[in-house]
Image (cartoon, rainbow, N blue to C red):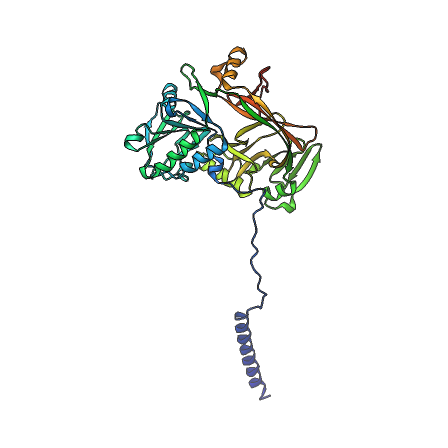
Length: 441
């Protein structure tokens, strides 16, 4: 019995040492996990990204060199002017006028040795700060829909002024151009103006003038086989977890949902409507942020799948619109969409409405040439037509009217004159005035 107590002490000491050793081993244990590289998730793209200057650009250029009004809507000519325009070095913008009248603007445009760029919607000036070298000043609330380039003292002072004008806010911002950047720009302008067509100003009392061509022109009718963006690709672009998305079909409607958002495809007209209800927001957002965030969102998946151009923005409702163009002309339709419309929500898209067909990847199956009458003849026709009042018209342009043939993959584009009144477009022909009471898309 005399060995029992020593034995207990030995066992207790052994257990304490074993406990300490095991604790130390646990603390210092490093499992030999195999090394796994981090998987890089690539963005799903339905087209190529585009630069802002490809999306935000004028639709018409007028010139008054040698006191003769000429102009163009040529995409190539406008691109050449804008390319050189971006190389100009400009002084800090100064607010010059806040009560611009229609008569004053009309006079500014018709003044000799000026070029005017027409934009379809108000562009935030800070967007152009990214393309031009303005001086440093905050312009979040400023915008423009006309740019007038003026060089009346060119031959003497070698200087030019540029005016950024808003016909909505009646404001004029002015900047001057550094002389060492003028020469190349002047050469490009002179070269392009030589190919402009004669225009006529249609004056209206206490209103902005209209501008139309004075000569007939030849126009091409196009027929395209369209390419559809696959529903699988759209699903991967729009939903965060495409694998859980459920699909249902009701007639010509395909619906996809993940319980948080809904994608609806109209398989007849090839239009899609996506909505994420939880993102709906009434929080104020400035025009620059709205337009920039929207373009970035669409660019993230290469959504500008044709020549889509910024055409409208409603800041209060967070809405932005991009119009389809072809050969430098806007495309309108009663049958299907020819524009992208978005509504921005709480830090993400709330609604996204657009075509899911692509003309620019189709094949021109046939084309024929017809004559479009001069714009001056269109004005005469409008004056004789009782249902259209010249004072109610915002603009008159040449565009394409898109018609879907019996073959749903075959789209026909017919050149026509169009009238803008309010937010509605009406198609004009010589024998009738066509269009919908709700306007063209």
